[in-house]
Every structure is written in C-alpha cells, then in structure tokens.
Image 1 (cartoon, rainbow, N blue to C red):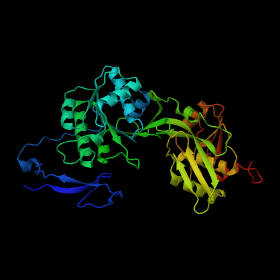
Image 2 (tube, rainbow, N blue to C red):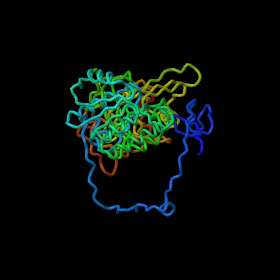
Image 3 (cartoon, one colour):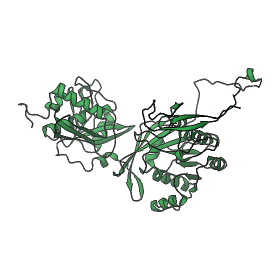
Length: 466
C-alpha cells in the first residue's frame, strides 16, 4: 500500500508546492505555505465498459421550456432581501465575508431571529464563540425571545447528522474557517479543511433543502480567506464593507445565481444592532456643506439603486520630493490618471501639490461615471471656488480629455431631483442626444464635452479664479 505523502499548500491562494518556500510563487504572499498530509486513495473505475457495471444514462433537455421561479423566504430585513434578490432560496448556499468586527454575526443573528419568528426552524452553529456569548449578543439586540436554536461545535462529524435530520429552513455556520472534518488531515482553517467542509455543508443544503449561510473572514487584501473554489461552490457571495470606526455598513453582492450582482444594502450600526437605511443618499449627504471648495456631489448607481455621494478633494503644497496621492473610497490609479489628464489636456498645474481624495460616508465606488465628479472636486480645490450647492455631476473622462456617456442617466437625474437638486453637469452627448433625457421638472442640464470646459467653468473670462 502506498505511503501518505506531504505537500505544502498556500493558505492565501491554494497553490500547491512540493517543498516549503518563504514566498508563494503563485500569489506572492510570504509565510503562507503550510504542510499537509495527502493520504493515497484507490483508483476509481469510471467507464461502464471498463468496470463492467451498468452506467446511468445521461439525459438532455431542450433549451426552451418553462421553469418556475425559485421560491423565496423573506428574512424580514429589506436591505438584506434586496441584495439576495428577494429573499432566501431553499437549498441555496450563501457565503458572507467581511473584516472581523464589521457586524457579520450581528446581521445574521438578526436575520435568523426574524425568520424564526415567522414560524420556521432556524439553526445557528457557532465555532468561534460559546453559546453564552451568542446569548449575550442576542440580549443586547433584544432578540432573546426569538426561537433560534444554538449550538457550539466545529466537528462536521457531529454537525452533519444533526443538520440532515433537522428539517430546518435556515442554517447559519459561523464561521467556515473553524469547521473541521476528521477525514482531512490538516488543521481547521487550512485550505483543505475549508474546501472539504464547504463542499460537505453545501452538499447537505442541496440534498436536504435548507438555506445555508456560511460566514467567512477577509484577508488583508480584501478577499475572502480560503480557496477560491469555495466561492464557486456557493450560489451567492456577499461582502460586508465599512470602517469599524464609521457607523455605516455596506452589504454588496459580488455573485448571485438567483439575483442581480453588485446590488447593495445600506445599514447603520447602532447600540441595538444594524438598522436599515432606506434612503442612503439623504444619509450620505446629511452633513455636506455646499459652500466649501473641493466638494462635489456624484450621482452614482450601485446595482439597481441610484445613490448620491459627496466627493471631497484637498490640495496642499508638497513638501519636496514626490507629491503624495491619498485616496479613500476610490481607485488610486484612476485618480493618478485623472490628474494627468487635467494637467495635460486642461492646463491645470497639480504636479507639485499633495492631493487627498475622500468619498464621504464610507462607501467605496468603482464605476467610471465618478470621473467628472472627482475632476470637479479637484478643480474646485485647486481654484478655491466651491461647486454649486444644488449641482450633481456624472460622466466618464477619457485620456484625451473628452467626457464620455454613461448608463442609467435618467435614474441618476431622478434621484437628484428627488433630493432637491436643481442642476446637473453631465456628458454633452447625453444632454443633447437624439433621444431627449427624461429629466425631472426644474432640473437644468449642463453638457460638458471636454475637461477644459469644466476647468473653464471655475474661472473668469480673464483666466483668474472666480
């Protein structure tokens, strides 16, 4: 019988190496390779002709046909249901990732309590905390009367039989990094254990019919810890974002087989848990001061929801050497590109200044439509001229300085009109397109074709700042 062999597996990306090295050759992380024992397995006989056993025939169906929509179980938390696509789907596996202390367990305990109060059986298995610690959190959140059933365990040999016979509608595993399968000879949290435990729990959910929610930790680079194959196993991947020192939290769907991706839910952390924010635009702009230079309002789209955000820019004299570029909530590389365009195409001198950019509210944005708002904030800071207090901006900027069209302009304008804004600066082709935009009544549109037009709007005809 062959002897067990050893291999070294990267705990960051899952790459396998025959020997230990200090730095993973695949992802470049240091000190992430862990030795694991690989037990030999007998070769499987696959083909019916080779084994002599009868094989079940594979049947195919036509592409056309009727399929019933997936049934939904509402969690009682509207923002969570929005991100999930309408609620929990039976037999679906959901992976929820986030930084430690961001509020994952709080959100899922609130959702579990709501589902249990609706008359469905809910099981909450914790591998990181004791039952007493979960009860203390429930007491703080006012959820002690909810009929949620708790258990503290990490051994899947004990957990799996209990789940298989439970008849539960929802099972929460907190967290997948603590689960342990005896058949896998490695420690909990290693790549092999996370992969095997995730597969076993997902198989149970599919065969039994309960909705499964797995809690996962995030690595320092913002990815869910463990092998990427775990994200392929599950039906939905949600990430919980936000600064622990900030009260707002963003729940974002990065994968969803039963709904839209890039949908977001906005929550506010309070002493009674996470509270839903039904109108995030009003919250994000609540503390905005319209008479300060370096501020512009961006009309963005997150998933299917229009959101207005304040973009803040600050320019300070450089202290010598390379100027500093600090960005919070946006892509630093895109800011560097935008500053180069403003200098090369619009004649704005920024090379010797330190530039600081912040998206107020703790939300991170990635769509190129924010280019025009960021440029407006930077130009406003450079000229010490505030933007109009009732103006919103959106549009993509190319390397030649042209302002390009973006999608869902009417939804952005509608949200701006709803919050009392009376003017919008947007790409010229949108403002003067063949099909007129359906802008709210009283909202005037200003078309910008080039960044030089934007810079010129902050200056007098003689070239000086207004």
